[in-house]
Amino acid sequence: MAAPAPTKRFALETTSGVSRLMKDYALRARKAKDEGRAKICWHWAICHPEIIRAFDIYPFMVELHSGFLSAKGEIVKYLELAEGWGFSRDACTLHRACLGHSLAGEEAMLPNPDMLICTTSCDSTAKALFPIADHFGVPYYIVDLPWNVQVAEGPDIQEYRVRYYQQQLEDMISFLEKNTGQALDPERLRESFRQANRLHFAWQDIYKLKSKRPCPMGGKDEVVATGVLMQLAGDRHGADFMEKMRDEVAERADRGQGVIKDEQFRILWLGPYIAFDLDLFDHFEALGAVVVKAELDLMYTGIYGGNLDPDNPLESFARKHISYMYNGLFENRIELVRRVVRDLKVDGIVYMCAFFCHLLGGAQRAIKDTMSKEFGVPTMVIDVDNVDPRSYNPDIVRSRIEDFIEMLG
Image (cartoon, rainbow, N blue to C red; front, side, top):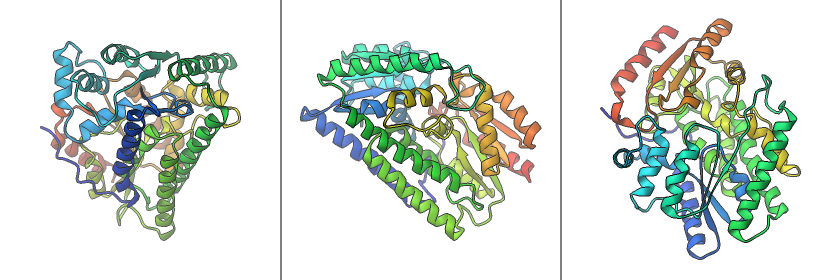
């Protein structure tokens, strides 16, 4: 049973502009490519758009496009195509959807790539790259992201790992120079990092404002806006948008205007969101609970791993990238969850465990036990595919949420 199409009810007026923002970006990219002024780079989730933008390249995150296909109710046919070609249902659904869509030869919202870049940040990114590169006949590059083995917050990383990753970034820049025919302009790189910081600083401001009770911004607004973090880091339009959103959230916080009139419970959502059932956040609100945080954005914002330094771009990028919460020991992710629970005064945690993804689904028992022991905060686990609706029953999931909220009371 598939979930109904989202009603797109947002708490913020700004959120309604995300769709237009993304379409405008794709149109600008397509026009620049058609006129021979720019190239297109498809990249995987944990990658380097801030660096890629320093060239005449428009980066596109392919997992985000799979999420769009899911939200629009168009993903199943591409999954079935990929499975028919022999790609296992046990593999990452986001990557299978991209494979199906690419190999089907249909025109996508994002222009066809001139190059592909990924990191070794998860099990399947590198493997999913090869058939797409072969299909489009374009060069690809894999950046080796070193594992963070420090049980410490953010920038406290072993120096040899930072130096290793800096060299990886320098080699990637050489790849970009070769495939664009232009040398890196240090000022363009600094400007890209400045725009990325504008975006991330505005989002960090929003995070702080969400500590207000009642919470001025809801879960549906957050997960839709997370797409801007994923796609538009380093782009001026993305930074302008996020500052506008920050200002609206601040105005609501000053007025004491919450997502719902009677906020009884504050929920932290861990793991990916269910792209085809965003109305699930409305169901929480109907029960007097607000999802005050959805964890996935913390992979991009620098709240945990330090901020970018335009005057020291590669080292600062390396420190931030290595320290993101899924790259390393689970103790660091637990510490991040601790911080969010304290900062945002969380009453309950919902852990969406995407069973196709070892990266996003790990440490659930450790997080559950730690939050219960240290804060008395209970955790509910939902085992579901976040973009494939074929095995999803919205009624069962909503019933479980109702039981969980009743327990909180």
